[in-house]
Image (cartoon, rainbow, N blue to C red; front, side):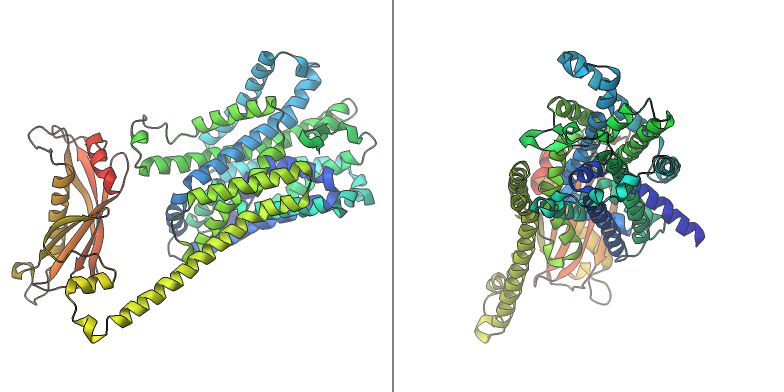
Length: 624
């Protein structure tokens, strides 16, 4: 019991460090600069509650099914329509973190030791930025390669111990007494509508944000596998994370309430908005000759360790996610890329570095990245949450609509942010949630209408006149599309073979023998192959098709002289394996059984396993 609690705490520490990315780490300084400690505690509290609610929700999901793999099975199904948004969310989070570290830590240090750096030529600036970005990314990739999701919590425990020593040492030495002043807590801006505009955006972004974070899903899944209580782990994580933010905000408050600080020190961005992200670093640089050497070095180490524990976690989780996608991908494009590249996070991190360099040179600020989390991703995350807990939201993802509402909310919020209009910021943040709410509610209404229509049809089918209708007409009334004549044909993506069961298919009791169903499916599969691969010839073929596995679930019995329809289609395929799905029906539309089978492709000479041949991919694609 004690070891399980300890393991849960270890995971909580890892959760806190993985969530301590650029958004929380540096924006805690900015929100303190704008709204004082009132803003800091509001920001930290809402952020921590959102993180805890993710753990609470995933624990509920994991408990719906038995076994330690339950949450992983759920995520595989749930994540399919959200794959692009999950990847983009992760890409932006990594970029934001590297960007904030470079701009708010390394550039102030670079300028302090290299006066006039900002006035140097573009080539020299780009080269120095490339070196700094490469340093950060290389360190993250190196650590990410050293640890798996199973072992990373121990590395984070070591890092967390160092950070704890740093926090205690800095607080004891600096003794930020200024934070107890009235001005540190209450600023004039907290009484203005703009404060509410920021808080609503923070509330929305952080309450739904973790649900699109691969690092958090990866941790929750691993915690479930290890028998930990996910909710407890995220409780520890949210508390530790809250304390991290408060510590960084307290240091910021010390700087902003010191005699050294004046408002002109803050940098000015687009729209005349002032930013104070790097002012703690500037403070340390200015007083480095007075402060003990370990003080600024400890602070810089705190920033770097906090950043690395996000970037290394991102490496591990991105690799896990991309490998799963490449393994199960049905894309012909991915099948042509050499093994190892589609599942590697290295190209992603290279892209992160390039975006970072461009953003720094373009004088972008942290908030320009953050706006996506309060607007664009909100619709995807909200619908993702609905699909976790609302049964009637399991419809196909309206990608175009979600992208449109996300882009609209982004533009509305951005306009409100640059004009400092709280009403537009609030509207931009809640617009995606309102739309998703309407989408789910609208789907529920359609479901109710459909159920009522089916009730009317069922009642109408009991009328004597309708009972005497032909079987084909009766089938049409019940919404079926079964072919009652024998033969083979297609129904949408399904290849259907229809025939009549005879005496040879039954056992001594008169029911169809259980083994015959597999024979029916096998015959239907061969007819399907004959249709999609009409030129296949065993004499000159470069591949053979073998059955790797076969599954069939028996649902209802049938007897001789019953008209049977076997449906088969391609459900999915990856580099090596194609999966076929089948269903067996009787003439009344009753499902007799269903299952699936996996096919592999081998060389006819030495039976060496092959990638799925392009001719097979082209033949199967129309029937996916």
